[in-house]
Length: 83
Image (cartoon, rainbow, N blue to C red; front, side, top):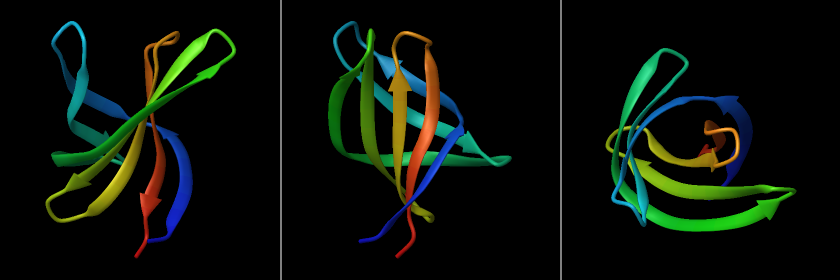
C-alpha cells in the first residue's frame, strides 16, 4: 500500500459520543465520500495540540487518512492510498 501526502483542508461530518469520535462522511475537492469503515485510530501531540489520525475506507474510492486537530477544531486529509 502506497500513500501520497495531501494535507488539504476537508469538511467532515463526525459522530462524538463524549469519549470517542468517528468520522462518517467527508468532502474533498467538491466530492463527498461516505466512510464505510475506520481501519485504525491513533493520536500524537504537536505542541499544545492533540492530533487524531483516522485511517478510513470508503466504498468506491479506497483509503484515506483523516486528521483532526483538537486545538483548532480543524480537519485535514493527510494521505490518500494510491494503489
